[in-house]
Image 1 (cartoon, chains in turn cyan, brown):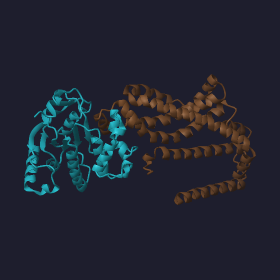
Image 2 (cartoon, helix red, strand yellow; image 1 turned 180 degrees about the vertical axis):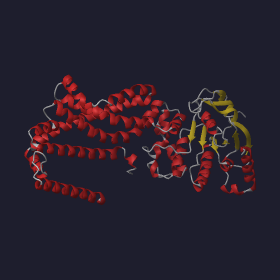
Image 3 (cartoon, chains in turn blue, brown; image 1 turned 45 degrees about the vertical axis):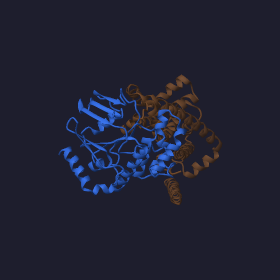
Image 4 (cartoon, chains in turn brown, red; image 1 turned 60 degrees about the vertical axis):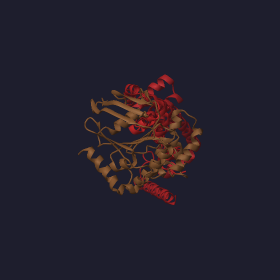
Length: 252
Length: 253
């Protein structure tokens, strides 16, 4: 089977004045298959966010290539949905208008996406909040709105950059289950960048460990639990074996 | 609501108290009226010259507001290219800052020389003093969009122009509107200065001519009217702010 996205020999160098010539990641090869949930774990500064930004088309690698559906790419030319740690909602827009923002930017007919937006809102449990403003919602609710916005334009790839690390433990577990539910419903290929090993093992089909300076792929671990997974899985021996293994691969 | 009403009442009581003390001090120390008129004589002067004062108040206000409108329009219009291009910003902004360092009051004789006495120097002085305090916060809000928000918009293909329109402008609106309070007082200062130097109408002119006749009470009437009109206009502006950018004040609608 051909991968949906293939990263081949990716090297990224930042040539800003501040971090002059810093090589963030080097020679990274990564295949992402249709419908897969791939976790990228690494310590802070390991280049995992850089890798996500390459996938998002926000950073152009100095070496290597991004291949999408067998087409070599020059910059960003497939649709991605991004969810960052902070929800980044626009406070002057209501929930529904925040969600429809990508459609406006893409220049598509907003009215055609209205029912999809309402469906996503219902799916994440925010029915009735369509016309609320972001500041009227809790942090977890805001992040759910941001998830809808990341999905509204049917991206080929959903990119999550530590999406739940600013939430409390209970809300985070709720969001894990919600995310799993939404991903399987949408059938979207997902890349989850996180430093939380438990989160990666619980949600992903495959965990890629990045480490070193500059960052390289250290190992890949296939997580053989069937989806959908239950929160109780965390308390099993098999789950903890995975966690211990991935944690070990991260290094000290 | 009840709380704010009782606070307003408190302010009024303090104001009345100040006036009573003022009246007594002037009476007891026998200060001549042309040095410091009593509140009662200011009030009777205001009533006596009611028509005259109102006409000149209107004259001053119109010029100040036209100047402010020009300043607001100009600030918005140039903040867009300045926000869009760093090159334009680095080139033009130091020039604007440099111009701001010129005491604008000193330009009034030149403006009178170029445009004659009358409306033009009044409007232009108001404009020249008011535009900088409006431009700075507006531009700052446009160019300080968070990097992550910028990346988010880029990730679904937004162009720089789109980011400026969808984020920069709405984000700058609360700063723009609140800077108009500052611009409002500045524009009245500008118009009054121009009226003192190069005009034969408006409250600035009335202040100048009444003090030269030692009719100090009339000058005080003008000062009080100027304070009142800027206060009222500022309140009107606050209402507009709450309506237009209520989100910035977290006003649920």
